[in-house]
Image 1: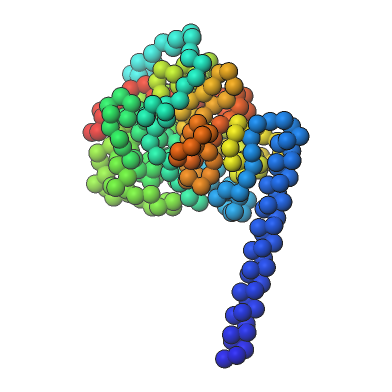
Image 2: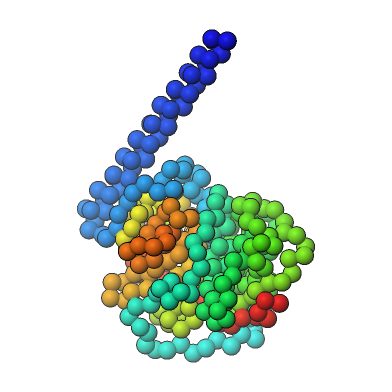
Amino acid sequence: MKLHIFIILLVLSISIVHAQEDRAEMLSRIAYTQKLIDASRVNWTSGETSMSRISLMEFQQRLGLIFSDETGKEEMLRNSQNISVPERSSSTPNYVNWQEKGCVTSVKDQGSCGSCYAFASCALMESYYLRHFQKTLDLSEQYFMMKTKIGNFMGGCKGNNLWVCAGTCIAFGAPLEECCPYKASEEACPKDCTKSYRVGCMVTGGIDGFQAALAESGPIVVGFMVYEDFRDYKTGVYKHVHGKFLGGHAVLLVGYNKEKEYWIAKNSWGGDWGESCDGKGGEKGYFRIGFGECMIELAFMGPFHAVNPGK
């Protein structure tokens, strides 16, 4: 009995030592990142977050945007043939923030699954219905990501591209969360989840197009390249300073500031990461990122009209 207790205590003490070593390593990494930030004279702060406390492999599991694949592009173009794309204004406001206007839903947490594309897409549709129909929706990311599955290599927790997301927004949309709750795994939804909310979307690019789409159509979905230092982001305008490329990530752009040259984005890593939308207080889970940073202006998915709202 005494030997059994001794072994348990020994295992616990070893676990505590390893945990202390891991934490020391994490704090050292964060301090090193901050040193490079200060040396580079960029305007953001690193710190301990929910993403800092997990392994690099676990962090990478959350990066589910596929940049180099155009699967679904032709289908999206076919589905969007009847979409009337509005002409964009040649001039845009200096500052836009849809969260301040009450047109952005709450921050969610995708968990250990490469479903960022589904969370960003559902967030776009939620914002669209909130702005245009005054409907506050909580849409099912589980349903959306399972509708994007293509064999065993795309969709679900394996990630996807913006073309497939746009096609899914048009053809399927998503029902309410209560019909198919999020599992952070590839579980099918009940067959009776038939009432969906859809939005006509297109994929395009260009910084002027980004700003015009944000100013006139509301929040848009974008992707960017994620590096190691991003998981320790705490607040400020993010610019990459060190670390290797880890993967692509999809988020919802909710605004921009021309004068200070940054985008405002809603993430899907919960409220224990990032800053509030304006960096001053309120719900966390947002971040700011500099214009032209990490290929964020490569392409965006923008909304144009609702497709059979709520049917």
